[in-house]
Amino acid sequence: MLGDIAERARQSYRALRIAFRRLTLDPNKAGSAASQKVLLVQLKLLLEQDRNAFHGEMNNFGFRCFSQFEEDGLLLFIFAAIGFHSRKVVEIGAGDGTECMATNLIINHGFQGLLFDGDRRNVWRGRRFFQDCRDTDLLPPSFRHAWITAENVNRLLEENMFVDDIDLLSLDIDGNDYWVWKAIEAVRPRVCILETNPVVPSDLSLTIPYDPEFRYSERPPAGEDFWGASLPAMKKLCTEKGYRLIGGHRFGFNVLFMRHDVGIGIFPEIQVEKIHDNAWVRYKQDHKWARVRHYPWVTV
Image (cartoon, rainbow, N blue to C red; front, side, top):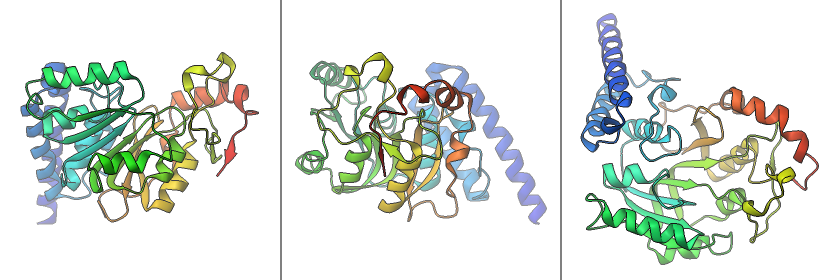
C-alpha cells in the first residue's frame, strides 16, 4: 500500500518535471496565466499525495516572467503549497513594474498590489505598463512614488489600506532594507522576499548604519558593495519578527522567509550556509569584501 503511494508520487513528480521543462523552455508559455495555473494545480495535487515530496527541490521550479531571476517560479511553488489567502502583495523598490517580484502575481494570479518606487519616472512608466495590460487595465495595482524610510513606511501602508495579513512582501531598496523591515508593523506578510548583500562573509551579522537619505547610486566605485544587510543579519531580524529562512534564488542574495505559523511541516528552516553555497557568493566574498570591510558597518 505505502509502496504503491510512493511509486505514484514518484511518477507524478517525473511527469511534473517534464511538463515544467516544456513550459519554461518557451518564454511565451511560462508567461501564460493558463500554463501557470495548470502548473499550480499539478503542484497542489502532488503535495496532497506527499507533503514531503519537494523537500530540497524548490529551486528546480524557478522560472522568470517578470522577476529579475527565477523568483516567479519559486513564489508560485511556495503558494502552491500554502495557498493564496489575501492575494495582496506589497513591493518596496518595484522599479517600473516590468521587472519585479509582484508583477507575475498581479497579472497572472489576480493579486491586488501596492508598489512603491523612489523614482517618479519609474512610477509613471509602471502605471502606464499596468494600464496597457489587458489583465490589469480595469483594476491596476496602486503604484506610489515615495522615498521609503523607517519613519514613513507604516503610515504609507496604512494610508493605502494595506494592513494586517498579506500574502507577500518584497523589499529591495539597495540600502536601508534592514531598518525598513525592522520598522514595518502595519502588515504581517505570510511570505517575504528580501534582498541581502552577498559580499559580507556568511558568519557576520552586519548592516549599513541607518541613514534615511542613503542612496546606492551615490556610492563611489570603491564602496559600491557597501549597502544593505548580510543574510545572517536579516535572518536574525526575521527570527525576532517571527519568520524562518526557507530558501533563496540560485545566486543566494534574494532570499525567502516564511512566517512561523505558515507552511508548517512543508518548509523547514534552512541554514545560511546552504543559501550561500554558490559561485556568485563565493566570488563576491573572496574578491569584493576586502574593499569594503573597513566601511562603517553596524553589527546587529
